Image (cartoon, rainbow, N blue to C red; front, side, top):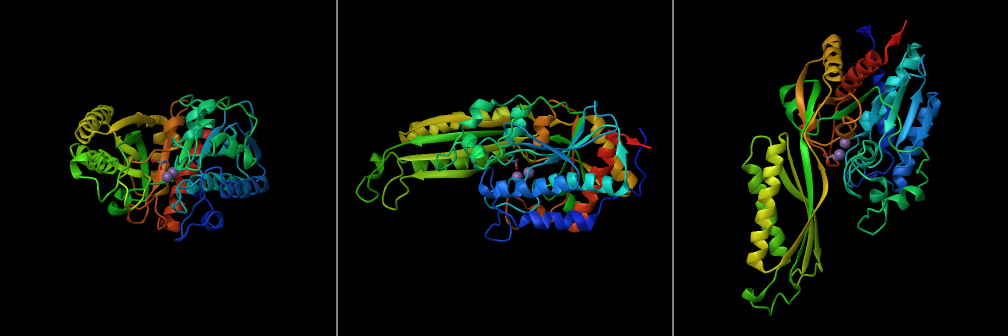
Length: 416
Ligand code: HGY
Ligand code: MN
Ligand code: MN
């Protein structure tokens, strides 16, 4: 396959302007974004993306999970397309670039091909996967998980948010429930550009992360049930304190993750306390444990130790517990061919690069099960993400999108 000439570059200003334009939709309270999945803000962001795709001459398809597929025709329409994209939904206190860089970087690839009048044999499809974040509705990477056949569509339609609203009904309400059956599309290869969301690339002064693997993840939702009672008049030995139980489990998760350094991680980010009154002992707590590791054995060992520890803690405090696994995927090895296309592109374009394991989960982790897949990463300031202060430079965004451009176009095969 002819590799694109090293002079093939995206339009850096246009990419950056598009990212800043998208950032105006669903603004956060501290400079980032709150464009959670299947909210009105998500709907508005989708409409903006569609307008841009229409202007680029792309044909839009939407499936029953709301995922958007914008197709640029190839010279041989019968060939399976090369897919490129990520997600437009954000965390409640998210940044401007997590996911957005990958969707708009994919759009920029197509816009640049249009500018240059370049045709490819394979069609190219720019993709916006619904509900990558899993913040409003668990699990993360929901639509790509249904597409890859690892999640049941009928089941996830019924998942509820904190207000008890159902995912399927909210998708319908914002008008983005498509008619295409999920997962029928054949994918020649999938490429995702994403910010690193960690400190390695910036610390080492490296432009491009060539993502060889993604670490595995488990989300365990725990419900502890004790007894509500007066915080003043209830003797300590008679308390059944679900809040104390949650605190001990949070410490346990941290200690166990620290036993498997340098790679394993663990934390509890979602916590609910009932009735959450200053002078009532918490009768019930609901929280989610997030543990991750590049090694499946470690992930399973942490899972087992945490379950044992919860049993011991609850025994001592005379409280009941329920544990529900609400998200999980094994460590991922990306496709060697696609990874090589990314590494060769970085080399050809003169960008510094290194292999890296993705700490965060991405739609690519699921799509890797059904098609050759790989990721390109760019640095982010202080490695910060899932924080409104998330920041990247225009140069980092352009370098990542240039590499994405070359990998996609090489795989889609330029027609001279
Ligand atoms: O949780 C994750 O790793 C992703 O950001 N949804
Ligand atoms: Mn993301
Ligand atoms: Mn994210």
